[in-house]
Length: 292
Image 1: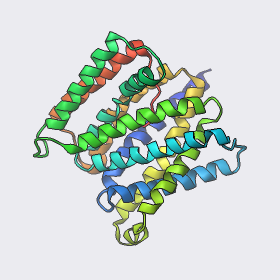
Image 2: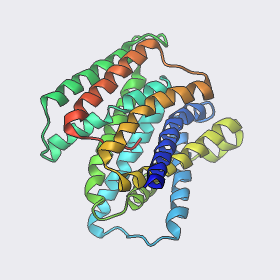
Image 3: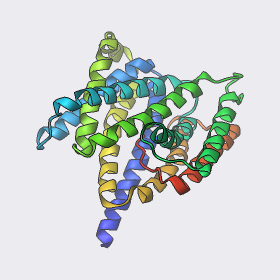
């Protein structure tokens, strides 16, 4: 029993560190690549890693009736990562994860709108605090702007992350998590490839640090998702998700160690309000499954 608990704790620590560091990795990669180039390279690397993982396993091929569903998932992933990469250009990795954590609230809202699930007054109050925190971050003057458009892009990433979660729910009843991640990632990669025309040329002149960062995030995000799938197979999602609240703090720590960047005190205040709103909402709604 102790051994099993130790394994779960180890997987949680690995997943949190890898997800946290991936946001910092994007910031590091931006020193040599554009947001679209990072997305193309990242997905190509992730696709290869997933193919190697699935190659020697027995897999369920998509049913014809699920083709459109998987295509939609791929499109959502495409939008998600483009928005994230463009948004993180003007805000720190720590600020980005604080905003992305609001994804859980959007999951509840989408479930209410499209899956006929209920919402509570507690959720609406949490949603209010979430947007209050987002507004504080968006209009703070830490980088000399009256309004930071990057916050809008990252907010779009949070919303599409929530959409991805809602869309994959019915598929997870018929396919394993690795299969859902694999098929949606491969489709997103095919959508991105037309935008990667000059990527090879850029790789030849980009600094080694930026290239290493892209390779890193392409691999570790897949490892983190696999770890999280194993965690959810062992314990309840509501218990596992508590640890996701540590991702922003871990990202800030890694961001300082890796890039020597720290969010402003105003951003930390806005982020604390966002996390407070998420925790307040989840106390009753039980929305806890989120993948960064």
